Length: 453
Image (cartoon, rainbow, N blue to C red; front, side, top):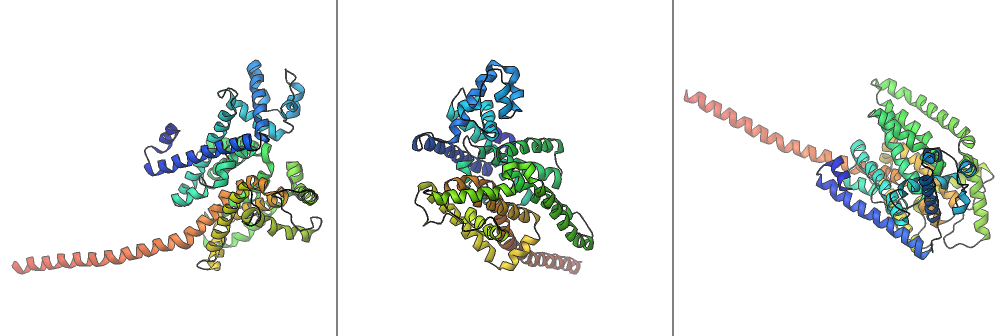
């Protein structure tokens, strides 16, 4: 990793400090979650099945090298029916295409991990770290977020350090989402290295789609609006730029409508209707069972008004719950502390120095609009369909850095920029008297010389 850092950043000592701390914490998160699941939960988690699937595929590829690329692009049913060894995903508890994708990635890593669970987990962790670190550098460079604040928005998010670090679907989908945003930004907003970034988009979308396709469903409509609003700044005539706003809103709404209209066909069980159906079924199941970290929403999913009532509840659950007094399990207490920090900074930054100013910043900043729309939509989807804080803490990590970017930009606009303007004004006031003193000295010297002559 030192070679990677030097290749990217040379001998930048300030960045090196963040890099080392982030890497150590990431590896600690990977080892911790692996050991906890292995010994506290007796290996009862999906990562073990993904590992078994990876070992099965590696063995198969070693015996049939010509099948590597064939299997990489196959779905599970096709593999079960056509592989040369008569293997079945059922043998290792791989029952869905989403799980099969994780097994494929693990199998690639396993070529150099030699059937070691911990080694494969570390490869997942390092791959995720590279994506997260790149995103950290990206938001500093492109959005002017101060380094320390950017670190807390990305590489130092506690939940991300844990749940984006092991053999999980979340590790793949979350990392791919970060690359998708960066590459799409450099293709559609600020053109740079087009071929490289188009390839990044083409790799990221399938990884997200085949692991957690609802992330794409929440991302694409609002990114379209972000692209349109960002490019609006290129219109030099202020009148035309102002008059273009309604057309941008109509185009954005039309794009969203067209996308959501085809969501059932595109995303199957992760479509809007299916999310609501899942939420209703999960709520019923929780009411009929006992779960230590379960929660319920008192809403009627069968009516439009009931769904509207569920929106703020779902967002609140994902962003700000569990509250400290709700549950006493270690994981839940950890998640609660994180949620309370989200709540504190949200309230403080929105209302300090005026709520109206916050609204003005939101209205005039396309990036903030994207971050809020994506975060709220995603928070609603996972909030109403999880019904269990233990699951929610893992499912919600895709929107966390984007929501924190919203808070970071709000802090920058309301606090940092005004302070910088004040300091700049003071510097100008101190420079002008000094300049005047220098000019007067020069004038006096000139007069003395004239008198002497």
